[in-house]
Image (cartoon, rainbow over all chains, first blue to last red; front, side):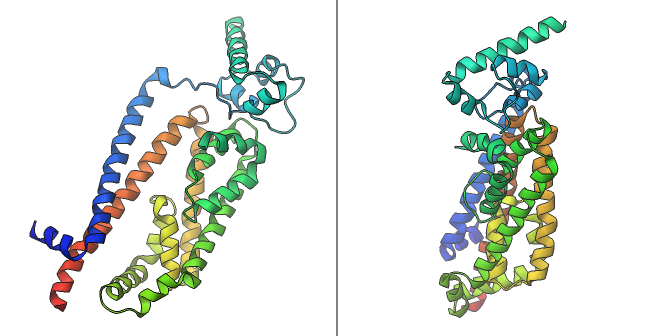
Length: 115
Length: 200
């Protein structure tokens, strides 16, 4: 312990950095474990639809044909320029939540029709 | 902020990725790992090309490393003052130079991917301590290949679990970097106190 006290006296800046790095290491270790536990729960693994996603990405992520998402969004074709859901909602002047609900409903009805 | 940025990936695509990895390699606090994961996921769904994504992230990272190295070399007067002053700061600078000469290549390589949060600072230090540009570039390029490969690959493979991969990867890499920094600083502080005893 004597060496540590001495180090504090002689190199306060480096020792503060050392303690800070140690605190961050513990924090990140805790968060890593917490996230692994959270994500190992299968009910958390269904990726919710969010504004940053593109129609094609949603189709891929929900394993439905792109056509299903396109129809739910009432798009004539997949947008030429790649667009996020937020952009489409803005253009159509429809709240994002409404669009998301439409896509989920379409995806679910597509799946039940398949079975 | 990160969700807004992620939404811009499919829209601005490759330019955005290149700019973000460039800035990320210069210690600008920007979630470049997350964006590469998102890019990989968009590549899996067919929105952007995986090869183009890889190349633009790689180009941005290499350019960022080179800029960091150049900044360190020609860089701020603060750093050059270390060289002239005597006493403790001189000892610190000399030790950094020793470390850089001894572990330089490996340090640059590992700080590109395994300890990526430390990357920008290692680039600055490598430039400031006069590491050979060839060594820096060779090890740096090899490391960036792995860094870009890992993150775009993770996004591509786990394209349905972008959030999960991003959460876990960010915290594990944060842990590795913080733990390494703690070990290095701890050794520096303890060894430093020992050495200055001999000096006095």
